[in-house]
Image (tube, rainbow, N blue to C red; front, side):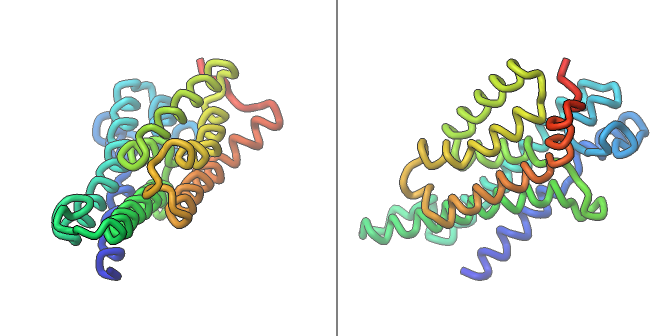
Length: 223
């Protein structure tokens, strides 16, 4: 089991660490996105370089690496238990429940590590993005119904206030509640919810400067 955890943590972190925003801007515009706007490598700051196409590509690739990390963890854990997320050869229902919870716990760990990799990417001296797109991709694989509701909340907040940062932090704060409310029992054990809450907290902490500007009334509105 320890070997499995190490593999999931390492692969998820390294996958999350791929700085797509930095790479795309460097390759296609010959610029360092970190010298633009907030210095972030996420899609919002990529858009400030003047290329909406690269911003959209960054958003998609950042989401895909989160999704890929969780999909890999689910596949690896399923193979470890004999094929499939829960092995069909397990006849005891209680044992099946334990195994499924272990699988989803590893998936939640993969999601957290992918977000951590994006926020503290090893390739850019541990300075990365804010983790929102990566989180959306990761939790689309783990808690799809909850992430849809969180996205709806994000859109509503942004539509009402025109603050993307506020929409992101509100949706991140509410997300663990949505998971608890909408997910099957095997996906909402205390350790899983703790990892999901830690992921949300990481995103909120990365928005600390935006929160300060919101409180001061100096945050830029989305147009």
